[in-house]
Each structure stands twice: as C-alpha cells, then as structure tokens.
Image 1: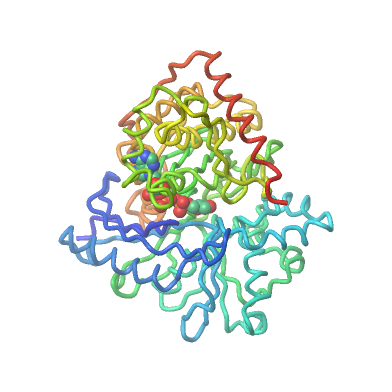
Image 2: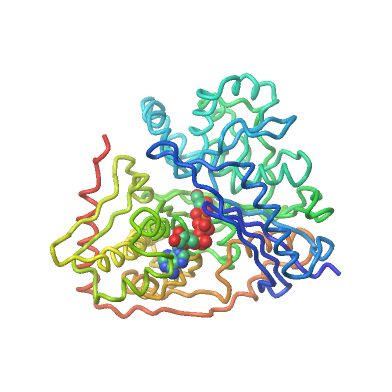
Length: 494
Ligand SMILES: Nc1ncnc2c1ncn2[C@@H]1O[C@H](COP(=O)(O)OP(=O)(O)O)[C@@H](O)[C@H]1O
Ligand SMILES: O=P(O)(O)OC[C@H](O)CO
C-alpha cells in the first residue's frame, strides 16, 4: 500500500523527515541537527556531506519509528533553506567548499562593488530582489573568485552549482541536476517573468550557464529515488518559506503566513502576476504546480528571530533550552524599557541595512536577564510588525489575519504579544510542520495522491488563535521604543 507521503525539510539548523497521511496529519518525524560552521565573524557555513548524511539518517529513522518502508510512500517532496550556495564535482559528487549559508555576510564587499554601476534597479525589476549578500549570485561569484579552478571547471560543466534542493535531488536521483523555480527565484539569476535563467543576469554576474541546474515546476516528477527511498518518485520541491505558504493553504490572493524559525518570513499570496514592492519587500515566486500558471508572493524576510533564543542559550548561557525563555520572560510584567535589535547579519526587509549591528538598548540598573529574554522575544514581533505594515501598504489593505507556524509559535507569550503589536489575530493550524506539509502537498499533487488545491485547502484547521488585546496608545509607545533602538543600530559597520 502506498498510503503516505514523505517530506524532507532541510532547514538552517536541522534536517527533518516527516511522513504524512492523506489528511495531511503527521504520522512520524525524525530530526538531526548539523554543525553551524562560523570560521570568521559574519561567515556561516554548512558541510553539505553532513547534510546529506543527516537526510539519509532521518529518513531511515522516521521509517523505522513508523514501521514503514519506502514502498509505503506514494511520493516524496523536498523543501530547504533557500539561497545557501553549493558547488560540487559532477563526477565524484564531492563539494568543492562548505556551503555558504544564506545569512553569511562575507560578500558585503562584492555588494558594494556590484552596486557602483546602477544595475541594481534592473536586477530588482527582473528578479524582484535587492542586490544583497542574502541571495545566491554573489556567494557564487565569491566561490569562483576564491576556490582554485572552480570557474574554469564550471565553464566546462564538470563543477555544478546548486542550492540545497539541487544538492539533495542530485544525490537522491543519481545525478539529475535540477532545481525548482521557487529556489531559483532566490538566486538573482532567474527572471520572474520567464522562470528561466536570464542571459543578461548571467552575463552581468559572469556565471557560466553550463554549471546551472534545469529549472522545474515545484510540483512534478523529478525522478525516482535511490536508497533509502528506493523507487519512490521525488515529485515536489520548494524553498522552505514557499512550502510553508502552500502548507498553510494560503492559496488565495491576500492570504498570508509568517514562519518563526531561525529567521522570520512573512509571505503573502499575490496571485498570478508579480507585484513590485514600494516598501522594501521582496517579490518572489510563491509556487508553480505542474503546468498551472505560476503564483507569486510578496515576502518580508527577517534574518534573526528564533536564532536569538539560541544565542541567549549557546553564547550567553542565559537559558538551557529554547523553551526556557518563556518562563524567564514571563517572570517580569513587561520589557522594563529594554529593546534588543538582533541585527547580527545587518537588517533585512524592509530596511536592507547591511551596516546595522546588534544592540541591547534601554538598560538600567533595574534591568535583569528576564527583561533581556523578553526583549529578545519581542524583537521577533516588532520585526514582523515592520513587515506587516510594509505589506499592508504595498497591498493597499491591512492584514486581516496571519497564519503562523515554526518552532517559536510554541511560545504563547510571544504569540500573544505579536497579536497585540500587529493588532490582528493569529491562527495556528493543527500541525506547525507546515513547511514539510507544503513539500508533501507539492509531491502528492504531482502523483495524484491529492487531486486539487481545494483538496489540500480542506485540510487546514485552526488549532489555536490569539486575538489582539492591547490599547492603541500602549502599542504606539512600545513600537516607538523599538524604532528608536533600531535607529541606533544603523551605521555601526561602515
Ligand atoms: N519555545 C520557544 N521560544 C522561543 N524560541 C523557540 C522556542 N522553541 C523553539 N524556538 C526557536 O525556534 C527555532 C527552531 O524553529 P524551527 O521552526 O525548527 O526552525 P528552522 O526550521 O529555522 O530550523 C530555533 O531558533 C529555536 O531557538
Ligand atoms: O531554514 P529556515 O527555516 O530558517 O529558513 C531559511 C530561509 O529559507 C532563508 O531564506
């Protein structure tokens, strides 16, 4: 019987394999963390071979826990941390360098170099993206400039470029070099109109076409998997935030979700044509299901959200586990005037300030670690409020409801504060594994396991809701404090 769908969720901090039943409910899950390699300030790398090993281990782990075998899976989907950039040898499959992670800032000097000629406006028109260290193109340029022989071999096609989806698909399918259009839309190399690599952009960044994967739909059969998923069709791939959009069934224009993980990513479905932002948001591909027309989204990306909780745990030792932050923060009635701006990689949307750095503001002798914990949680909410405000202005209508998911949504204090600061209700579905669910939906639709978008929308059920309860004056006072702190974080790094 093939009554289940599998999804690999390869995230910034961990890799999960989740098995879903036909109601979209989690049957079982296995998870492995991988090393965050930080060789210099601002540099963040992953070992791609460790990621592949963890992927295999989580699949084996989840199948064993559920007492299932690969033959029980009708299809498998892949979803992944986006923009993270890899090069590997076509013959041996060996990576040429550690993967350069999306939040890595080493290419700031390249951003400056490429900013000088005024091409950034054209880049934004074609790709929907600002010229920033976040996206893949400059990471790839850096690899070509720093890894001996990489460029010459890429030109010959013996070295391949890919984001993490490509890397996993290549390993699963015995060497098929493919990517999906949502991941490609984060490279600064794909045109949002044609959904193909763009000659003008390739020339601009001097990227050889021979090293690029073929761009596919988010939902189509990519190939049959090798062990440990022997023979299972790999039938869906999406960047993780787009997968969450689909997993949250935000299928109608105007519907939006926010995922609170390492970072925070607010995406709104904007329908069948790309909508340019006037407020510092990104225009991105939402999803492309088979031969259906592509669906676009506006996105607000925040680099540091849950990562700040981890930082309090690992770098300051303020808490022993992420969960401990909630009781600590709750032990004080408010932030006591303390604000924490986690601009560790500069600030992404809507400000795009690479020169910002993290700070804690408003400290007095009265401040305790509980105020710092509270300020760290509130930072995710304030950053989301900035995105929501920009999105409402772009869309010409306020957000009526925000669907939420990701690890931080377990934090009740944060979610209530978020509803208060947004002045809009939050709704969390029965499963917060919506990222993996989106990849499962994409794969399931491609093989007919689920029949239509309506079929998957019918699975969405609200399990928890937070309603706003804060007065306007208090909301304005708190947000003003945040804005003052952000102003002070700007221009730190010059
Ligand atoms: N109860 C909690 N309160 C605050 N942050 C949390 C809590 N639980 C998890 N987190 C944070 O959420 C992140 C994990 O969420 P997850 O959705 O698994 O992220 P990712 O997919 O980016 O790896 C971590 O950064 C962790 O510190
Ligand atoms: O791995 P996550 O969930 O933190 O997501 C990372 C994003 O895809 C980066 O753009």
